[in-house]
Length: 476
Image (cartoon, rainbow, N blue to C red; front, top):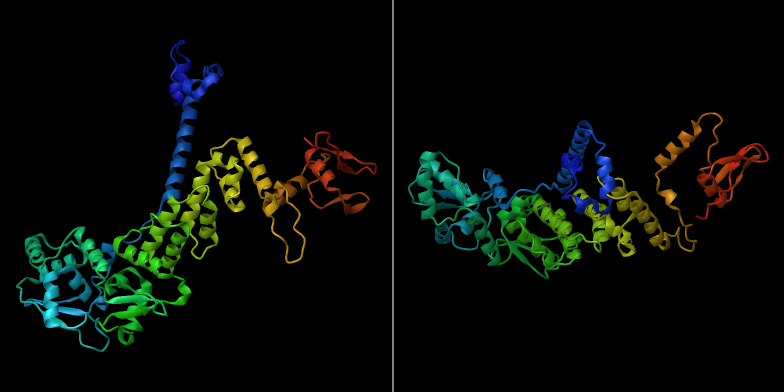
């Protein structure tokens, strides 16, 4: 851009492609640009490129949001662990340990075979009991059977290419859908309420059906329950489904649990028509049940819901809520930094907490003019002047603070140290907000005189000690 402007400024007068940028200041810009040398233009161009690169890096950092494991990846993770199996498929060439719920959901042929050989409700294997076995007469090599199990869990297989055709024949013979259809099978089973686990509150006022294998693969919270105390002594209903009574401390309802369970199966949240508070509930429930995928989806929804009217609620939830979220904090800061002009409205400033505004103002990538920043600070102080907290019951309201109190104690200490190290003979302005020391002793000073000392240079008093000077422009 600098090179283009430089070439334009050195051309004869004619059509100006930059008039829409410079407007009425075109002649002033041309005068300045004509003084540039090729070297100075090159240096400025490098500096701009470096700054833009830093901004791009900062944007990537702010927006980076690492997703958790997908549904298929979660099932693939527990594929090799025998602790998550409760059924044996006995083929002529090998025996395979699998999860019964996986086989029932993913293969209609094997499901019918299980119902014939193991009639009754679908129960999980219990500690101390023999794992049930289902005989399958299909001839197949052990290598191809490994690929079949992978297809049952994840919808794809990874075996030696020599056995690829055999695995494909097995998959078709047992009716196992592959690819994206694998996750659709689970979602269909969820909608049909065919799960072997029931989630309910302590009073049993509602129930949500789901599958044990999904809970085990996606949540450490449920894995601890299903593999621990509920494995051999958990309550069951008439159909043999395990009943998981949710703790009252979770503060969740039927709608929230339904959305959380659906998110476990689909890797997405149906929050299009939800309120902000419902999004917060899903976020808290996802954290309570140790479901990173649900937390990720809820944070994505809440970040898209940030507006000038909701930023205060989102910020408090991200900083002081039950589930603090650094990523949501970054999104709120980025939202205000990009739309800084909107802060010139008093209605918007009422929704901006002080700590959030300070972070935005201290950002190295805030693109705003200095007079706009000062105007925002003064407007914020005026808008929030009536919202100062009281000291306690029956006590007077705190004295309204000035915008000088925005500086931290470290910055104030630095300013004080700088004054103490001032050269000899240089009068220092009074910066104390409460007391000033003179040659006659320490006494309280009028607040207006203090402000005068901050605005004007010190002059000798009658006693010979430096004191604040009266500034005729103090009201201005």
